Length: 124
Image 1: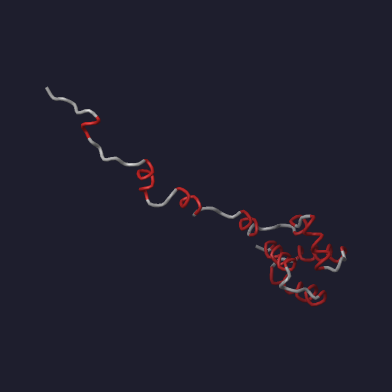
Image 2 (image 1 turned 90 degrees about the vertical axis):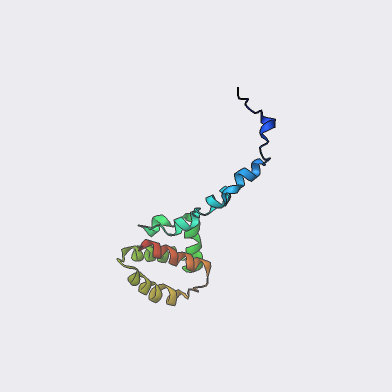
């Protein structure tokens, strides 16, 4: 009759649980962080149909005060004009001629870059 060896008789090599789990190469954290899409990046690339609806209250206030010298009517008229263009080069040409030159926009300013980004999204 054959005897079945007990656990102590089998003498399996001692291994830690951590060693057994970590033997697969990359960690779970490494696998998960590789596919993370930053929400801000995703939102900055989404198309916008209407600039007026895409600009929040705070941004509207900043744009009017910093870019349009506090002139709300000029801001509204400019947004309506930009929304009316069919392609981005048209809008860029108009903004260069009517806004940047006449109002003295500084392209290094955060508000200016943000406004241009929204206009680009409008035509993407």
